[in-house]
Amino acid sequence: IQATATGRVHRKMDRHSEAAERLRVAARERQQSPEGFVKELQNAMAELQVPLADRSFRKNFSRNYKVLFQANPNGYRVEVLDSVLDLNSTVYVNRRMHWIAGLSMRKGHVLQQRLSQLFSLLESGTLSLAA
Image 1: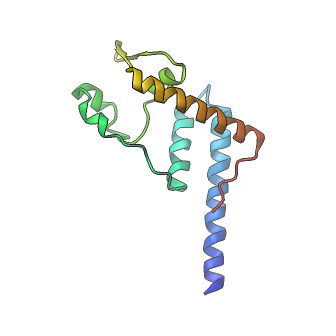
Image 2: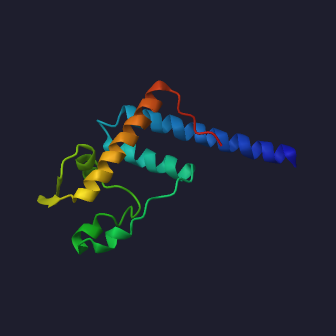
Image 3: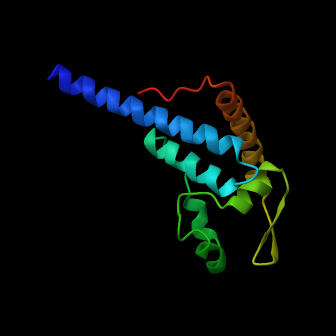
């Protein structure tokens, strides 16, 4: 029984190490491929079973805007994430300008700080996604 449990722990640690390495690479290439970074960030979150923030506010989105999230209902839209991280209160979707509300901008500022911390950890190689 102990050997089986030990094997599971090692496989989990290997998966976490692989997820950390993929996220490290995606973070280095985030300027050229923001979609790739977002995808690997979401994969790492799933691997680590990070709980998602409440997304119920999206119920109030317009029908056209909801369409943008159909493929990935729990994820981020790269253009919205870019606007929030750049602290830009406007985003263009389908050539139409939309305003990002103050609360979202404040949350975006916190997200920007957390991602900066994550990037620092990834670049230094000190991030370990242990079991």
